Length: 366
Image (cartoon, rainbow, N blue to C red; front, side):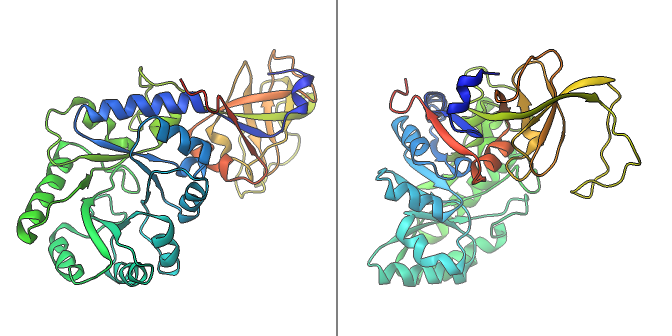
């Protein structure tokens, strides 16, 4: 909570500490490197923010990865010289942009790869691809027993180069990226290389959910790459959300202005129906409380991913308001309240056009 002078700063805003981003990225890169694993810095949680991409690059990552081609375009146009990777299967309608702004793309559909091949030839480029295999999470990927047929088909495509295979776990199906799954990926890679006389540069084993496996395994096998975003921004293990001791937490902070403070009953008065989101709210009887209303709402941010800094508690939200029980916190109208964010809340806040990002420690990472 801050004083009236804070109202001259932009509100609502999300403050991103680039020093923390740099240090977390560097530590994780070194940790994975010790196991022979390279790291992609994933920028999708911050909409491909060039200042964040620059901090990750300064920390030594060799790849910047994102699921949106618009974000990779932003990074390229900012003049950040790093290998740009599109980690969501390209859509047919954006093949031209993919070849223009991504050096590498992750793929699972032959018709899309054929279009990438044609577009790369038109742009006089060689576009590198990673072929995704589905190991049970049931998101993107070719089934293991169909990988050989896919590679056999794409070998005739000009303009592209197959540089490896990858998988995604711990996402839609929440399948754990454990030793069994990583061993399976290694076996598939070795079998395909032998069958087609290939030598893969990248065997991308997954994302931040792979940290527990990396941390305890003595057998990484052929896996030599991971895509890391959430751990950088939260400092948490994404399997059980426990804090990782070496990492810094709260790389970002949401700041919102208080627009009303009133003492009111904690329970609504009248017949309860569904709210604006089709839900039936449940309230606890706290007696009369000091209620603060903030200038943010569900249209701006995933409110359940916010944790107030200080002795107060979120007790409700609508599309445009967040209501907090201020308890003993003597905040006034015009002052601000700060929130720590989960990764989901960070992603939604950065997507909101109503919340402005502000970067701390830009250019002074250490």
